[in-house]
Amino acid sequence: MLAIVWAEKERMKTQTLVRIRALDGFNVELRIPGWQPKISVFLKIQQFPLDLRIRVCPGAYFLAKMNLGAEKADGLEISDLELAPNPVPEDEL
Image 1 (cartoon, rainbow, N blue to C red):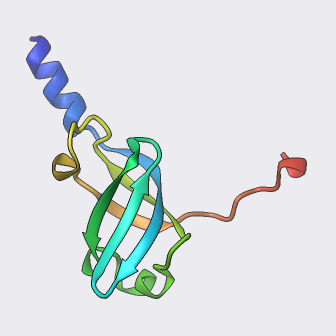
Image 2: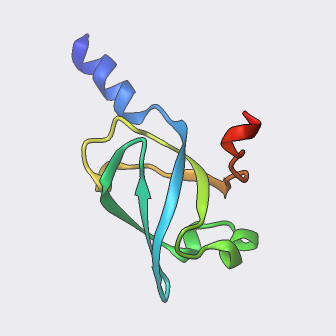
């Protein structure tokens, strides 16, 4: 039973913040603070919705649904990429 619960947790998708670190042609390097903030994850630009590709640049933030229980980057299942809203200044919180 414990193995089944853990496997479900590894596959359960949660919306989380994604930061674009670099863009090299068709490859996008990103960091996922809610998963492993020091590990780079690489996606193809084609994995972003067509209307958002122009917004993919170093320093940009997106929201994505993914299985944060994955142990390794190749186990991540990333979907539903969207542009993150602008941050709210601290004095406006």
